[in-house]
Length: 124
Image (cartoon, rainbow, N blue to C red):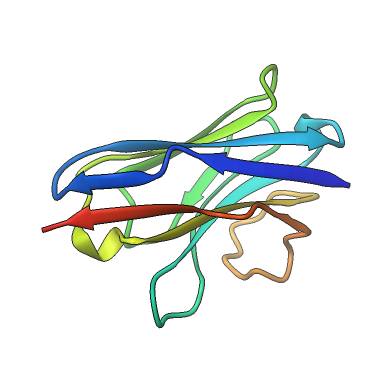
């Protein structure tokens, strides 16, 4: 069992930055890959980024590549999503999730545990 808690969301202007955190407890943090997803109002949840167990490999959705950076600190049991150059279309509830192995696959099916989400709103 893994418990995930996201934080760091809020209201920011276009072009601004936010850093989301995902604190994990339960299973050994370094034993699973971490992903970030988001869901905008009226839309399906979509993949944002994933990071491998050690942090050496990452993969991003095209919509955030070059603007967002996923990272993790296994000593702190925490994953991060640094979001720069934010746009109104980045407005969504952001979720972190775990899966037992790393892959570049963007589907949700491989993910086992999910956080409750944190709201990010980008004003124009």
